[in-house]
Length: 591
Image (cartoon, rainbow, N blue to C red; front, side):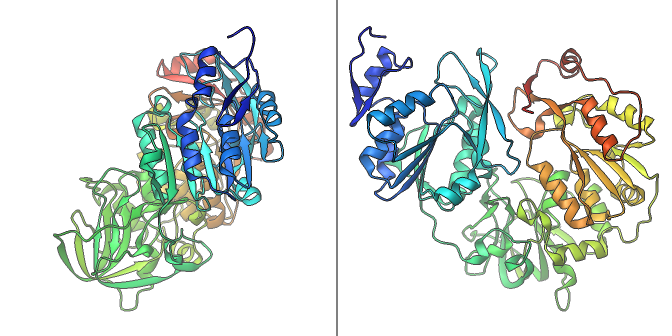
């Protein structure tokens, strides 16, 4: 650092002295190379009258340059690092920007299960400070308050988003509604989430209708503008209260195909005989359309008769049980009936057999004798009846009334209750590689002592699971897909407690599914001391939750699930590490 600080500027923005300015950084600022790719992108898309949200202000230079050179109506800037806030404010004051840029020391969260605060990890340099703690760096965790993205959308009404949040963009884009934005400037951080995470970020932008501006983009910084045409109401996400989710459409000569590329959102689904998109046939997950429009394939097989569109046949049980049945309600509604139910596979070259749990599930629906086919090649159907998506992940987890009625009428109708009134649903035998609750073997023993039968659903058929769930009057369960199955056959007479095992929006969706279908909300027991993350994957579904057993005991007792008993001792960190090995690292959970 130079001893006598000399005034420096970047594109008309004067930068005051701060301890974060090194000689190299000063030189890059003056040459407009400091955050130069983001600045170039922001100036390429921001217009007079725009309302700009910046996430990850850093030194405050990018938003200041944008405010002074592009003429936006207002700028709302978020920075998680509290140490940077006074220096950013000094920059705003020096340039007379206090009335044009609002600065907040918060983390913006798009997920529905937003905590009040989050850990933010500070290193020796402000560059790379992140919500993600890196093992190879010495860091200090500070608590930073959060803001809901939905509130930002409602209160600020942004049109442009500039985002450099050191890896946090992956989780943000997974849940964020970008529909009101005209442009996005985003820096990727594949060193934190790999090429797969970078691909998923790009998919989220494309799925939201954004296209890359090649001249204003680089390998790691994308400048995007909205390119997709406005969609009609049928192309909007499913609504449990009505709309296309409750309607059916018959399409003669429809062509169906599964995905030909291994991406979450991919060209697949249903088109008309002339190649027009059939948006009612698309699967939606949260804010994302999974089946995207596609061109008619040059070669198609022919399927005669009238078939009901079932949608996507998932191979994984967890997704099968929530994303494959959502259109089955149409089977009871088509005048004159159908010849069978037609699905497409989720992934290319995937062959989800119709035996095992799938056969059991359809039989429990009373559809065991109905022809069910999976179209592995593009197929032209003489007539395809397309019911709307009546259930799934997102707001549609509530289920449409017609779908709930269908499930109540059919699912497990011929299966009698069997078993005790106290049931503990465990994931212990699945192992940590499938996501688990740390020390669940100990929890099993504790629950047995309280008179609960320990039940491992993966060791039982679907009819056996339904029978146990119908018989139980108190169910305690480690959060997982078994509870989705329970929701289809349970009722208000049964009390349910969910033991959180991860930080995920899935917990809230499971709880909502249970409440809407059984008429009784579950008790959510959220007492995680820490989450152990698989070092090879950042995915929440692979994390292992470390429960605070004394607090868990108190909550279960207070909710009436267990009685007075000997105190439950906590799990030691040594015990946890010994159980998981070196592939997992511990992340403390904010209280």
